[in-house]
Amino acid sequence: MQNSFWRLLSYIRSYKSYVLLNITSNILTALFTVVSIPLLIPFLEVLFDRTKPMAQAPAWGWSISAIRDTLNYQFGLLVTQQGKESALVVICSAILGVFSEKPVSLSLAVFHGAGAQRHDQGYSPAII
Image (tube, rainbow, N blue to C red):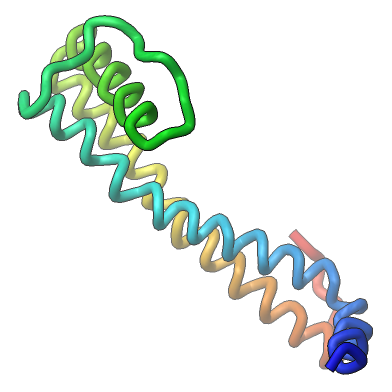
């Protein structure tokens, strides 16, 4: 089993750049998918007064509750400083940006995966 793995890796050497770009693009696609929908929830709660905006900045941490509190604080600041309509435009633009990056990174993953196949057939396309 160990020999098969190293033998397989020896075949991948010539495709190293394609494999790394494909894996990176797939990770970005997964990241944008995971981030896009939950990004809406805290903003909508503040916008429709389901939760009160925090008066002072919370302590930063890597827990889910700390990130949620930080987002609630930032969104509350945005709503109070710019008004609900302007804040909605800003957040919708940001969410549109996140949603538009998802198909771009997925397309790059497919492109780089196909690049390895083209390389195998004798083509040598420029790597983006």
